[in-house]
Image (cartoon, rainbow, N blue to C red; front, side, top):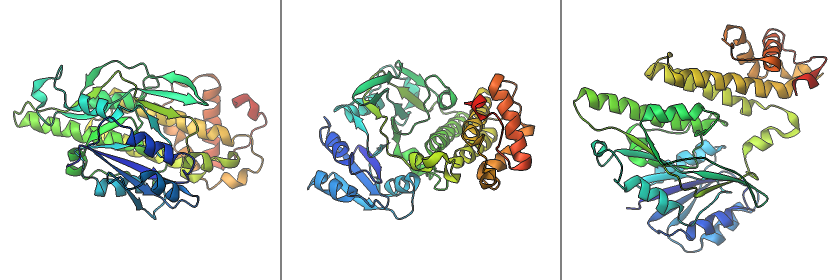
Length: 353
């Protein structure tokens, strides 16, 4: 049995996928499998991937006709046989010892509460660096820490030390299998944060059940100081194509749908009177404003009357936005008007830029 399954959705990635595969081949451990899932690429991604894979038996290339990274990742989950699973993107780069570093953190009991048991560590979160054109722009300021599921869930909605990404997390596959967790395929943005939250909430519920059964078993999320993951700003993503021409596509607006589902799940399991719920709610409001800001001032406002974002604007008046100030507060009032009228036009759009 392979220790780690690496799942990589591939779409229009001919420029990068060869380097990503080569990066995996350089890993300092070889007890892993790499599952590449082509998502209907029309460029040379498949040919480049096959050439880079060669006859290495650790690699396999699958096809998924349903569009979107969620469908591709779900296909990878169904065939993954590793004890741990890591989701990467087709243009990712990382240190040659990334898998070894994360696996060591997952299995090393030093400093870990013994009550966690063999299945205690359910997630390892690595540090990361942001690069553009060969220059490092950012390094995540992480220290070696351990969290329970609720503590980690808080970090999914923090501006500082944000941890909603999927690509810097090693997840215990048995948790995914036990609760039949899958990426939601109708969500194209924020789908990774929704998946991570569901993973954590299931672990939280399991810990509560264990407590009722007088078991001292509990889930541990371990963060490590090492920064083996390099986030490249040339990311190839559906996000860039959805925003082409300045339009806010309905697909991009599914980010807000993801927030609605996250809030529903948080309320069901943790309730509403907690920092996780309030932070997620605030994040959703700022996301709505960010999307709406791109619409403001467009004279051909009729094209937005039936836009998915308007459904959320109709609910805007009921939202508590006490934390909004200045331009954001004024823009929120314009957003409310958009919900009522469907118009995004304002005489001074530059005021909100």
